[in-house]
Length: 400
Image 1 (cartoon, rainbow, N blue to C red):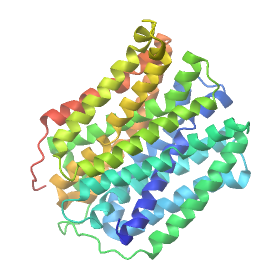
Image 2 (image 1 turned 180 degrees about the horizontal axis):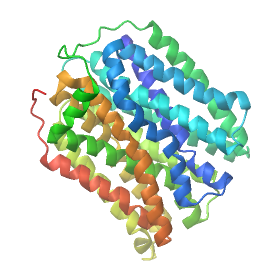
Image 3 (image 1 turned 135 degrees about the vertical axis):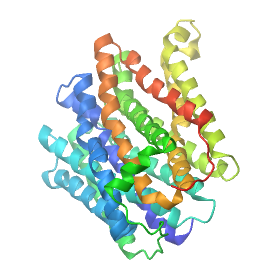
Image 4 (image 1 turned 90 degrees about the horizontal axis):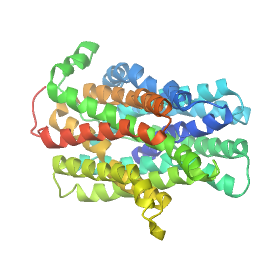
């Protein structure tokens, strides 16, 4: 890892804190007695800001630069975290939503700048690999919340105590990231000389390839959010686990994603991105198949193939399949039209609002069918779409 990439990788870890905070959806469900729909809808408060802020911030970034935009995102997340640190707990629903909202705003800005700035610090041909590595570092931040809450439950801490420790950790690392990025000197790669605008951003949507890839990000992020948010609820409701201890499965999920991204970063130095996308989507669908048929397999009566064990196995297969989808789609789009990196970044990060839209749909399906497992058909269909991208899109570079 080059010294100049360290602050960027640290910023990627802070991106993961956005995921870490939104995994508190299951905490909200238990603490505020919410339905599946409302629990998933809480996430809307943060992730919808990806849809609102990303394109405007892509335009701002084109004018002030990626480093300054990155700093803006880090500072906003820091203020969101500090709203909880100053109060000392998350016992107020409106404070809970405000914290998620601010973290979501900052994370949207961070994603707009962080993904393309990685290209500025990457050697030629290494962007996809480094972006996967960055996303693996992001995964470390993503499982911070469930790790802290799980450890707290293990030592009989209250969720309020665990949350206080969590947000204090986030505040310290965010402060370190702000300082390191501020001190970073970097030569940003220029675009085609034309200033980005709303017209140029939305004009990119005339390109069918861009639309397809933006939709890929939209459905994938929604699928990941559904699974990450629902795993503790699923293990609690179906296997009678304590809610705090069930957080361990989010930890397993993100640890597996982190390992998968580290492996993907190495493999992408030698393998074609389109082929890799296709294969990783197939692996995720295999994971869904095991999850859907876990009870059937468990009914066979084989001791080590209980429904719970098969579901845990499915979780790992899913996570390995999910691991590289986001960096693959993002880097494929940027590498194909590099002259429009800021506009593409704004559009692609806007699509992260799929994490605000798809989880409530999955929650509605689960409530309507009285089955969280049936609700998982929504993210499964999203991965079918990703597979279609891997089968059909071209990676040949083009002019915008």
